[in-house]
Length: 181
Image (tube, rainbow, N blue to C red; front, side, top):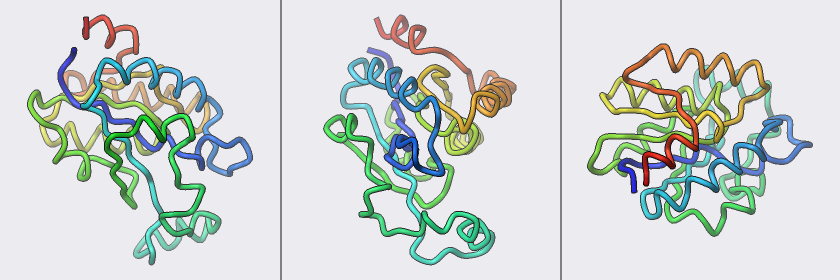
C-alpha cells in the first residue's frame, strides 16, 4: 500500500452525463483510472462533490448567471456521485468552491501526500492541487484518472501543474499502482 489520501474529485452526474452542459467528454476514461486505484488506497479515499451555494456571493453571482441550471439544492440528482461510485465512497465531502483542499485537509493523515483524480482537470483538480501544494503537501496527479472540459484544456492543466515540481507531480495510474506494490 502506498501512503497518502486518494482524493476523487467531483465524479458526479453533472460531469458524467453527456447531455449536461458541464459534461467531461472523457469522464468514463477517468472513471476507469479511479476504479483501478481504489483498491490500493482502501480506507484512505475521499470523494468530493461540487455543489452550488444556496446564495451565490461576489463573482459567483456572475458565474451562476452564466450557469443557472446548476442552482439546485445539494440533494438534486445532478450533484449525486456517478452511479458506479456511490457504493465506493466511504467518505464524501462537499464544497461550493472549485478547490477542495480546505475540506480534504482534515482527512490527509500521516504522510502529507495527496493523490488527485477526477474532474475537471482544468478546474477543480487544478484548484485543489495548487492550494494543497501551497500548504506544503506533496501532490500527485494521476493524469489518466482525470478528465478535463476537453482534451486541450486537460493537457494544458497537466502541463501547468507539472511546472510546480517537486510540489506537484503529474503521474499515471500504472506508476501509482507500481509504487503501491
